[in-house]
Length: 525
Image (cartoon, rainbow, N blue to C red; front, top):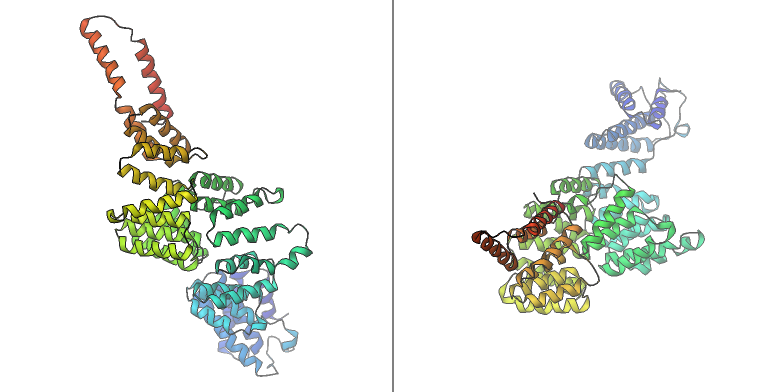
């Protein structure tokens, strides 16, 4: 066995540090004595050395060695004979297992992507003839084309992946994200579904994520719920995570958090987004950044990092992330919502209005787009009436859409139409329970002097979200301020003390104890 074969065996065994040391020494020997190893042996040494550098994440050095290997391979292909060497005089190219040139180019492309040199990665993969491209090469090309905005080329590559591997679900998601119709994508998997048992769910899965990528959150939720309820797919972490995302986009924070927590119970290592919902923005920012390092095309990671940056006051940085998310997922409403919230936070009302109008025209008039446009209109006194009209249309389409209800309540509060606001909120809470709605209802009830029920609403809000600071502040304020009845009772006590008459104050002591218990219950300090 030659020394090069020993290197090959160590590489196959995963002894990367050993390969790096030995191959480095052998390449130096070859440089000092070109006759020591044959061209094919030198090619192998260069590839194995580059692989070890890649494993150590020294991508720039690895690219250099892969390039030298390809040059050596080109020289090797021009000759049919190999010069004999002192290390292995009987070796011939036919008897050796040479590393694949295509695999070398793929590894180079991986290095370029890690170095964020996507153009170089595309160039090296484009140089591989179409017939020689493996599924992983086509998948990498599809992702790179998509990132570069070359949608047609990306679609072609994703379809080629599916032709070779019809159960490549990430390729299916890639096609759906590029606005390829769900029916067309499903047709590419129909044969495999019919030929393999227990795959009938796949067509429903494709349908669900087609709804996701067209922004139809309600139908996406219903379809994924139908999948998640099936015994074979119950408690799937990915489906629960998708449901959590969809509920959040639909403005249903309660169910969103519930689904994330269910997913985290099943997979304790899962921490995506939950830090954001629990207002641990620094942690959310860190997780988002790490996720982007792993997959720069992750829309969810971009949204998480953008939202964390916005809530930390780093609005301009957040805008960059939301814009990138829009480029990757132009049909996702939450990408636009994040960007518009940034514009509003920086008082860029004109930019927010332009973006909201574009979304309204692009994605159509639905409850979400109507509410988004109304949200911007509320920022300008001139467009208050337009905001009211838009919100009424949104609530006609979806009376239970929480974001629309919140904005309509905000408008009614400005107009001091508290009774109308109370009716609106009671109607919205008839079939759902949401922390924000209960808290706003509490605010409205305070405005009409319904103090006891206001406290009840703040209490319900805190039971749904113990971290809701505004509900806690409302409850504390209520306990500090006296209602007219309390004031009258205190005056009566003062009168008794002033007249020297003894009154029965046991009830008051009992009430004080009750308030103390409530303070402890609500976590007051």
